[in-house]
Length: 309
Image (cartoon, rainbow, N blue to C red; front, top):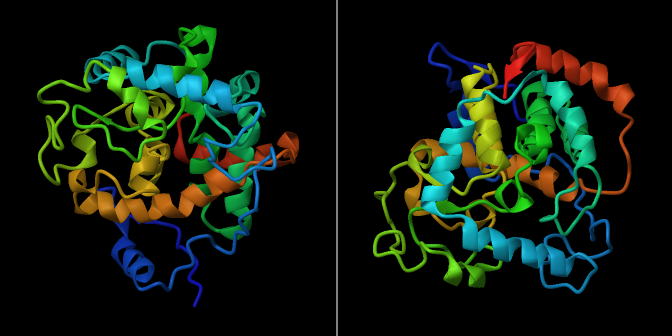
């Protein structure tokens, strides 16, 4: 039986009503996680998705990206970046204005696509919209999930790609072998730290992902923007945005020992979203002007007109 995911209804504590029943449906195998989405056999370059070993024109640059990323992302570095950008004093602009800024950037860490970021956002959102037409909150989450990549823009400091994009992972504890290009962590200052190199590091078992310092990048930044600008999107949307690049967790099952019960519940929403984030990438362009009115209506519903960035 195929169950269409219901529009989450928030209770007085801003939690999603009825979410437990949805999780039960997922666990029972009754919920079709891809909503009928047909997964393509190959990416925009004719290769398997997320194949970091396949010989291609992008392989060398992607691997070099991860080498720099894994050497440079330390516990102290990420916390300093969170403090710096958490002030949200870079700009005042709308969600759609931020979308348009991303027309200028291509993600160097992505082996599957070399199109401007706004194309990926719209492809993901429209793919979910086709399969789950009544889940407006999820359509909007897809549209905004990568907006943190605005950190690449000169107006925001022109950060290098290695501290903006790519797979994310916990810091302050051991680097799991399921993280792509794990071998380069050996040159990271935290790799041999007596605390940070242990399984739990600075954390405790089942402490909850909200207490974990993740590698700094667009996920963490957009999560801060949403939270501090008091979006009315449900908690699942914030979880998706913050952890959608945490592939070691939601693809390989790593770091589950840091999760609490709330995280496990939210992870089911991320699994629904992830298929569309990954497999909707293609060379087929979305007509921006045609879909813009719909997404502007969702933005107005869940966000203030102008946000602090």
